[in-house]
Length: 353
Image 1 (cartoon, one colour):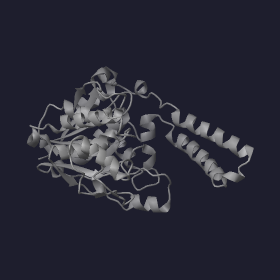
Image 2: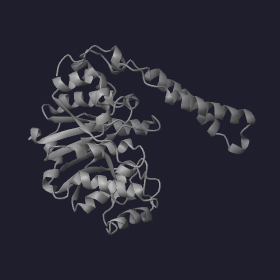
Image 3: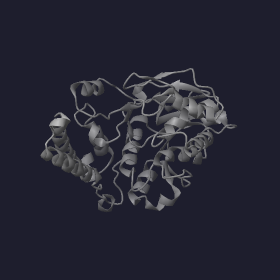
Image 4: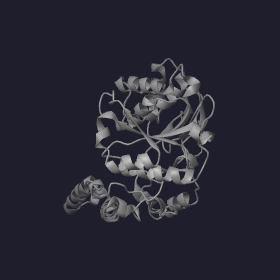
């Protein structure tokens, strides 16, 4: 059954290369011999490093090109829709955001339900907190306001259907007449062009997704949080770490590698890297100063919180100057470019596949 479902993700060089490698290693480690397709914008195909081509060949990963974005302005989140539109196979497909890894093995076919799109509710109501916003979007397509509601997985807030687009599964063989990816793209473009729909970026993919499902007359197979488990958090509070450590997800949506730290998942990236590549750890593989950079940002945040804890009316001129400087330092720290590591790597980084 595993061979009948394709797992698809985007790599957008120079971005998402490390993340794509980690995702591939985790798929092979946990799911074995299933179909994997890495999708790349056609104008960036030649920007893929030679080590990625070597990995793709040895790990049996297909590289598929997709066309430039038709969105009004640059919109990287829309690449998932374009990648699905470029797919030249029919049948079951699971799209994964590239900043995900497989933690626990499963049969990919169990996410494919006839006539349904499998998705997990979003963690928070990042868009559409007021029903009028959703009403305006649905009315664009002569659709009624949905009677179904969903509970956000992190806040328990009740919302009109709103799903995280980081894990999506469906069978387009059943909907060849509608062509779900093409309908999703058309839906997103029309919403994007509507000036009366506000604050759409970066949520446009998630705004258009439930509307497209309704337009396609498909059902929602609502997934539990274990299928799209977020590690992101604002603070390493005991409650947050407990939430994470008590979970046993199938798919981890880590967002940033720093969020693995101080959790039960902290050694996972190092484990799969050491098992399949010439490197012993994430830090060695990326030649990154992530621990140092994270500590610097933490120190800045501590100083910022000290000032913010004061009543604004009590802020002195020195407090305001320090606040301004800390904000500048934080922006500078966050904008530091990741080191270009691929030129330092050998032609092949794999020890096994």
